[in-house]
Image (cartoon, rainbow, N blue to C red; front, side, top):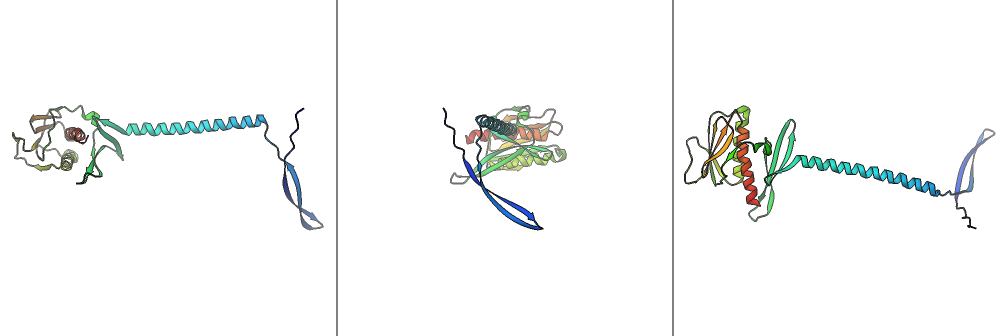
Length: 234
């Protein structure tokens, strides 16, 4: 016959206020109270409830991590080895890429950020005919009015910033032309029926702009430059 477990008791104290003959007295009672242990069924139910709570919590954590991953993958992508991040500023959307800046000792100092307005994957639809060549000097010749609500100024400034980063000296000279010996990169920007970029000599390029697509044309040229920089760095 199984031996019955001895009940475990704990000391308890109870304070009671008693009113007698208009006077209030406080009495303290001491005693013992049996500690009741949970039954096997109660323990089983508690474990089941705990497992359900942990499962729900784990599901929430997994869903949260999945949402973060999807958001990251949506905002980050790679175009021909160049990493881009989608950056939103109010109603404006930019596509950011960055390249490292090194000291004379070869130590990385920081990153130089570039922002373009057009999706690199969509810029691929703008024809680029030829291959990109780099030089220590660049001459830009723009014929025509490409104000385009300020986009023309932004387009030229972006190209100048990019090539200055490469150590290229950029000047604007409407009297200059393509140099057959390749002393400098010559970039001609003019109006046309189709927005495209084409190489017409070793270091000479023409960006044709249709209907104020000045950013599409210049950013297509920049995109090829990004790809070339990435190849050099890697």
